[in-house]
Image 1: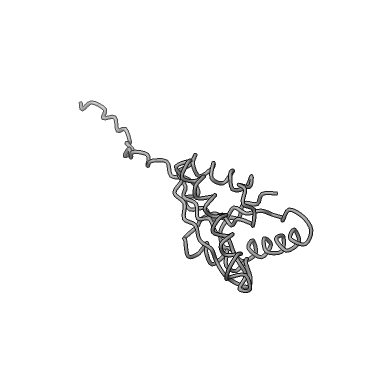
Image 2 (image 1 turned 90 degrees about the vertical axis):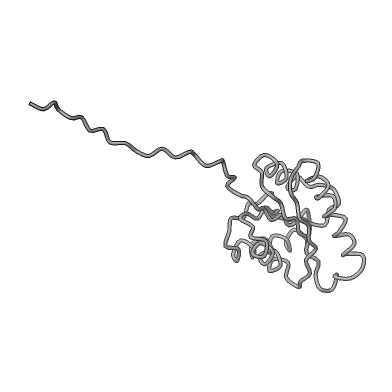
Length: 151
């Protein structure tokens, strides 16, 4: 008589891949405020905690492309870059020019291979609130990636 043979199925064991953040490249369109907004602070803190990189952009319209508006945009982005550096977050900054800010934001997301856009849902007050809400709606409609809104 032969002894009974026991067959135990085995599964190959693979080492788990190192944790990858859900979002690795975050596009952060910033408004005209020189101070760090809660949106920018939250986005940078998330990036610092997950190892994501941030691409901060500010859009000036064609009419504003020269002069003081462009210089102001550079200062805004410099504040974001300094905070990102302090937190150890890789950060690229870019002033974009175009007649339709939403279109420039969507294009930047594609160009920079972003996998998340973090932006404000509304402006702070008055006419700018309506304009920004309109731009945000268009970004949501045309971007083919998640858009995280802050109010």
